[in-house]
Length: 121
Ligand SMILES: CC(=O)c1cc(-c2ccccn2)c2ncccn12
Image 1 (cartoon, rainbow, N blue to C red):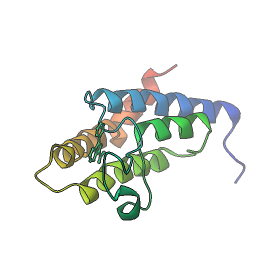
Image 2 (image 1 turned 90 degrees about the vertical axis):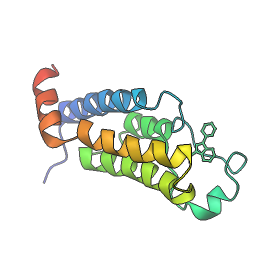
Image 3 (image 1 turned 180 degrees about the vertical axis):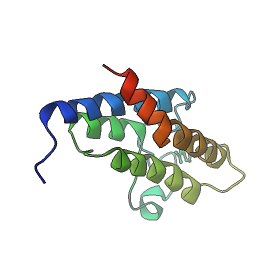
């Protein structure tokens, strides 16, 4: 199957940039804004094999790394699950990830995205 046309990938970029902004608004403490360093989280890089954060997702949108919404969603879930892997359940980080994951899946639910697609130019 021929790759997506130019305007189709431009539409996906616009959709993903919009969704990323909505997700970032749900993280006012900016817990997920930047890559987690071993300095702030001891042993992080040996526990988490595939780190992910909002700044990396933003860069991947600009670099056209995502060809489907599903790929974007799985990076979002990876980011939340990494947090729930490294941090104990009774931490603010774990609780923030659990809440963000729940909210994020609602924002990116198919019927929500469908109504978005209609409303975006
Ligand atoms: C996302 C995550 O696991 C995380 C973010 C942070 C974080 C994020 C911004 C500022 C300070 N810390 C963090 N600190 C300790 C342990 C884990 N974390």
